[in-house]
Length: 241
Ligand SMILES: Nc1ncnc2c1ncn2[C@@H]1O[C@H](C[S@+](CC[C@H]([NH3+])C(=O)[O-])CC(=O)[O-])[C@@H](O)[C@H]1O
Ligand SMILES: O=C(O)C(=O)Cc1ccccc1
Image (cartoon, rainbow, N blue to C red; front, side):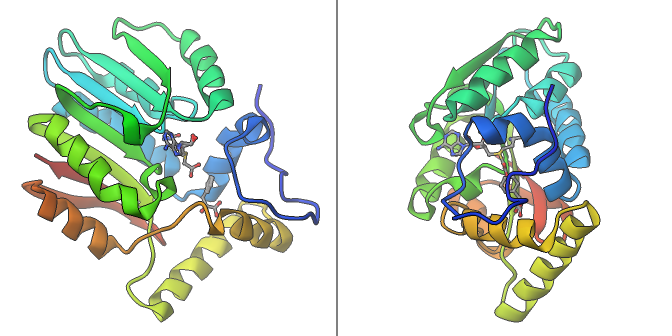
């Protein structure tokens, strides 16, 4: 159904990366070969959602892509009267996500919506997921989005946030980037693919340091913040209201 990612295999003029039909076609292979621990992160999010989902509440998968996290949450949640809202602003992604989710049966309703997560009203939420999505939101909009998520969460509700992050200083950052590039090489990407993708994502994906993520969430009012996964410059954390 989907194909191997060879989008940057040939030398080409590089435009800003976007989640268009070509990317959708190769997305599972691209994310698997580009993000260390992606499978572990997705399955652990399912487990955490199963633990923290509350009866009569909403679960949000913001920037859902093909619905990988929605699928695993749906399998793990056994509370009453929950619904999942899965949102993405890429039309080809959302169309494919709907097809993908129709292939699996579940008692938990999923509302798959095309839309901008910065315009989404979060209400009555027990679990909100941003799995590698915040990094694509313009930096100046991140604080307001996280505040909106915090106010929409019920007491005891959680935010699950995964991000590519920037090292705390230039040297640490270079070290992490080198290790990530080694990971991509080991997964079959060529030097040309690695360097062209790096250029393509430069303007659209702006990582922040891990300490700035943690400080911002603490300032917003989350009572607990805990990094539970890190490999190179990729991390996943839980924040509890
Ligand atoms: N403003 C926005 N509003 C809605 N969606 C957006 C916005 N900006 C970007 N996106 C969407 O965020 C997703 C980011 S991918 C998430 C992986 C997924 N969570 C997964 O668990 O497989 C991560 C990656 O490719 O590194 C894309 O589908 C964008 O269309
Ligand atoms: O490919 C990379 O280098 C990344 O940092 C991860 C990524 C994965 C999928 C889309 C955009 C970025």
